Length: 373
Image (cartoon, rainbow, N blue to C red):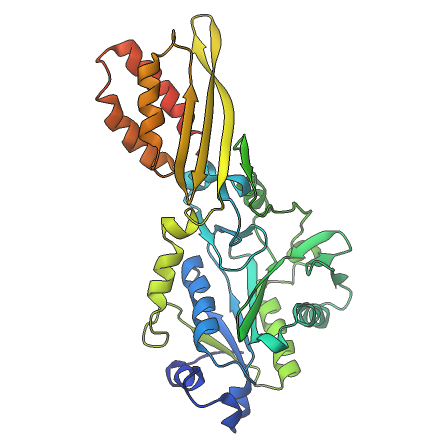
């Protein structure tokens, strides 16, 4: 059952510096089931952080249900250039987000349910949470063969991954969040989570590809709404709390003071790209020349999303060395980003001789370089 719910006074009471939850006599305050009314990935990730940082969770577990408009979410220690097709995402207007937990890259849309289980650190138990989800699924359709794995995934029929797991464990509080594939766009998922970039070497955490399936493909009655209600009911029974899903707005500063600054940080270039572990790019591409092609070599070191070293090698007879060196020195310190690269190369081009054939080759080379970003 969904009911509108004003959380302002409730959250004030549950913050760390307020009265501990154990002092409340109302059993509804011994656990909460929340659902976001927003489909914005940055707002929903920010709310996770806000709850983790502000709510006193002792005797007060929280289940948070949320869904996002199409987006790709990478783990805290991942490299987006290795994990997804950034070119396609820009073309399609698909957002990229980096969460604060570890784990692999996932695709979200409205056909994917996100579940976040908040507890104290001492009561954190991913396997119990996954078993709870399995019980909820079986309550809806008893014949479903869904099992948790040692890697804390959920498998359908022993082979199809329908849920992946990540977590954040703080000094006192912890959360475990997982996905649940209901009716996600599998074509978009497959194309967006396939990196076209070559020659990247990194120690970032790689994702492990899996064979997936939607629950709706197994049974057309398994809609997101049905599944969220079932999981909420099982969670309420397990924790002996009211089976009400409280609707909340994660952008409401009156309920969650400071949350918009958290969302702003999560959508910043510095967080999404600048937090990428150091990596290098070593690639070769070909450019047309007379009746044949020439090879251009590009080597870059990238740290904190910024180009630290750059070594572009092109044949002198195709493009003079002094012009290539303008790019090598000009790129150092700039963002590993096609938009910034375009601005930078346009500025540098003005310093080159005003010769049409040189400008043409410069543009070809710069277009190839932007293609690796």
